[in-house]
Image (cartoon, rainbow over all chains, first blue to last red; front, top):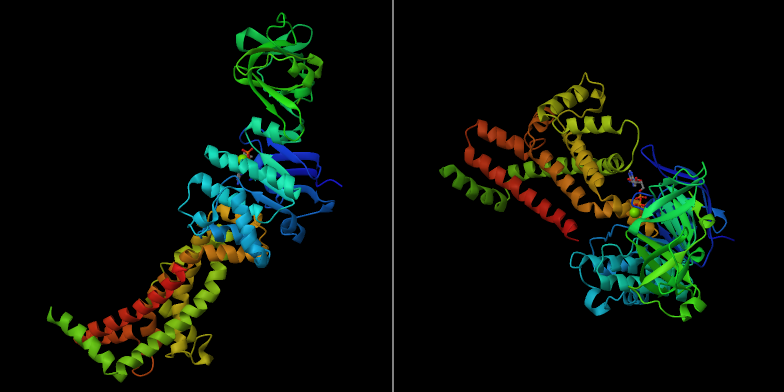
Amino acid sequence: MPLYELKNIAHQYNGHLALSIDHWVLESGRITGLSGPNGSGKSTLLKLLGFVERPTSGQIFLNGRKTVPFDAVVRETVALLPQATFLLKRSVYHNVEYGLRLRGLSRLTDNRVREAMSLVGLDFDHFAHRPWYALSGGEAHRVALAARLALRPKVLLLDEPTTSVDAASAQHIKSATLYAHQQWGSSVVIVSHEHQWLHEISHEILYLFQGKLLGSGHRTLLFGPWLPADDRKVYMLLIGEQRFEAPHPPPEAIHQVAAIAAIDLSILPHDNVMVPAPGRLQGTLTSMSLERITGRIHATVGMGSVVFHVVVPPEIFNRGGFTPGSAVWISYQPDDVVWY
Amino acid sequence: MDFLFQGFLQAFKLLLTGDPETYSAVAATVTVSSYAMAVSLLMGIPLGFALGHFRFPGRRAVRLVVDTMLSLPTVFVGLMVYALISRQGPLGQMGLLFTLPGIAIGQTLLALPVVIALGATTVESMDANLRTMLISLGAGRRQLLLGILWEARHGLVEAGLTAYGRVMTEVGIAMMVGGNIKWHTRTITTAIALETSKGMFAMGIALGMVLLLIAFFTTSAASLIKRK
Ligand SMILES: Nc1ncnc2c1ncn2[C@@H]1O[C@H](COP(=O)(O)OP(=O)(O)O)[C@@H](O)[C@H]1O
Ligand SMILES: [Mg+2]
């Protein structure tokens, strides 16, 4: 049974459509990354998944049951960390224990608070009795996360948890997220602009664009502008006069966004003798990392402002020649491009 | 200027010697304002909360009416209540004219809009993120309302104190509806008005000091709630 199923969801603010999802299923026990430009409806989707708001229309099924805000099952299952840090005007301890108190779990409180605070790297003796105003931005956000972790939620929804926090805080938040998944089996949905982290930690990445889900998978999105090329093709101009070519978008592709999956891109070191050709591009290897969840090796290749996400098969990787900063080739089949 | 100093001395003398006339006025003031405040808070906080928290059609119109009522002149309220409870009035049978409950009705009309308007403003200005936070940590409907009320407590206490200030200082209603009857409906403010008209300034100042003392104790008690 899927964890979430969304049917015919539309959410409006003052008549303005912010989110529209006809059908979407989210499996349980996974980490899902959610990415997309500002204003694309990521926070709105998370608030609906957290049952903080009720969709203007449509239904949300949680564990197969139609669920609305304030249903008892929600509080036993879901915890949302909203984008904006918000603490009660109380001590750190009281903020972290608040959710437990709401659930009448006071007997667990002390252990859970200690556990949650250590998960986010806040020393109990040092921080527990600090007032809410005596914290840095990153510490305050970690306190807010600890308040959710204290509940050991089955579903943890994180809205840009590492945006606008210091590097150390971001590190603690990332490791706490992984811990929740690995130790408690929590399903996690993470909204973030940190692609590297999302690729590392997620089973699946979803893209939102203008309130619509653009399918899923580890991949690169290209927003154009698209110019006409020969034989019913279009291209986007990249750095060094290179062209990313793709078949002409079908009429139903209203957004004019092209997507190419990470596994559909091949990568080769630059010393491989190749000539630029359609479906072949030269860029700079900007990072190599292990996708901790899937065990795959993941590379990013920068071309000006565009960053391609590539899966590197072990046999290619073992040939060597992949040093970040070096020039590499990527190649793809234009027919693998998907249009939205 | 001598009467200022005399007034101070006399205030302490009146209070320490247990002057019965003074204590009668104090009792009337405390009784009437307690009634008025109890009703205003019991009705005003839920109404103010509702007005500030929920979005419903006609909300702006209600808000405008309540805000306008903040400027109600006390003598006008006095007049309206007088017309309502005087022998020929619709509530004439209840015999409320020239009684403490009569004054309390008028003072409630004075305090209620203050509690509602300031309460609504407080709840309205609560961070929208507070609601999200409470729900996201698992608050039920009742816990959500209580949580918001608790976080709004400073503003609500402030609203109550402002309303209390209006009630304690008004003369018009107590005079018109109460009739300033010695040992019965004479409050501190009507007593001050009377003493002043007789030229007994020191006595008036003494009574004013007494009023301030009461206000001081009430405010201190209220600030204990805020400090929590
Ligand atoms: N409370 C709100 N009132 C009105 N408009 C809103 C509100 N919240 C979000 N929006 C609008 O809805 C759209 C999606 O917002 P949001 O979900 O916050 O996007 P994201 O999190 O992807 O940046 C935006 O156009 C935003 O301006
Ligand atoms: Mg957002």
